[in-house]
Length: 317
Image (tube, rainbow, N blue to C red; front, side, top):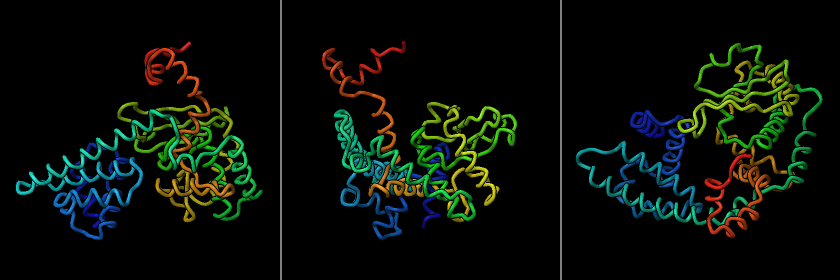
């Protein structure tokens, strides 16, 4: 069943990024498992039933939106002359739900208040230090086993997201010393790269595969040197267990998947009895650097929104 879903979605959407394709495939696979059926036609034959099931299974507006978007992508692969009208009607029903959900999401975002999930996974600067110290203390002086390496990997993951707050595209990254790869422009563009510059003791992050690549293009991020010592040490030990050069590996020394990274990161708050979130981490990064209450007060006095303040009136100095 999984292969049928993947084949249909890939063949019908070759222009989509690999990340989006995998998201659609994963969502539809989970949906069919939830519905306990292999009959994809159910997605357009009874849209009201499907809408009810989504609302029961997924409480988050974002999760529901993702499921409807994936469902519409799947339905477009099933269109024939005989079912076109039914599928188009179903897609319209799902689009109505997406519109309602996006209105709810936008209204919540305008309050600038964290939702329940964000509140539960939010950590302060003090708590960041507690987690970092706990993870660091689990790293042995000498890395002898994969378990030892994974303890170091977990610390690397935590400080990586603390410093750069990216998404899970770091899973699609390989790591090298700059002396191992030559001209960075000549590297294949189908993956990302963490480049350790030996002489300068700095890190370059080449983002070829990321969510907004179509809008923003390929990005080169200079991360400076504050993570160089631990990440270069991690890489030196990583090479003992694998020569694949994937930046993040699992217990079998294989590439960590995006869903697995989400789970790994969530577990890093165990010392606080907290489940962390990569998405919440992105909110934390911005919130620690932007005084939203001050912005709201200024915007209110100027009789416009915070968004207008930032997009139109705020200028670089």
